[in-house]
Length: 110
Image 1 (cartoon, rainbow, N blue to C red):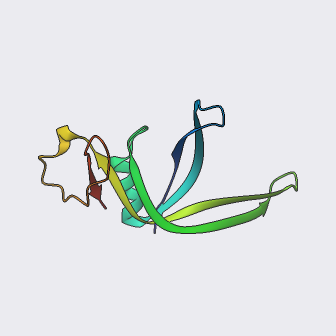
Image 2: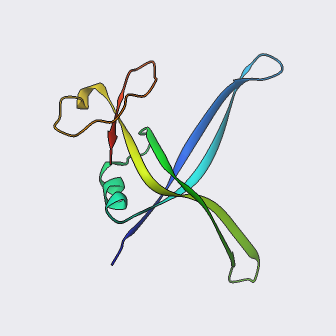
């Protein structure tokens, strides 16, 4: 039996508006992770922790219980990297590439 883990990531966009004031947009994206990758996501993901997801887009379409047409676009994860803080760097867990970030945090590749 193959297990499915579903989670949502928030993608933040910061920009200056026409008036020069800072603005922020947040886009919430659903992610499906299957098998071992999904199990690892359950172990390592916590709310607010940085994550990089690589995968393919998929669209589901269905009629709900009231007969209304519904659809959702989501990512089927193929590769996930979890952001690691400085306090976690001296572990035996393999590291991925460093993210270009002011805090110079590293990522855990699964």
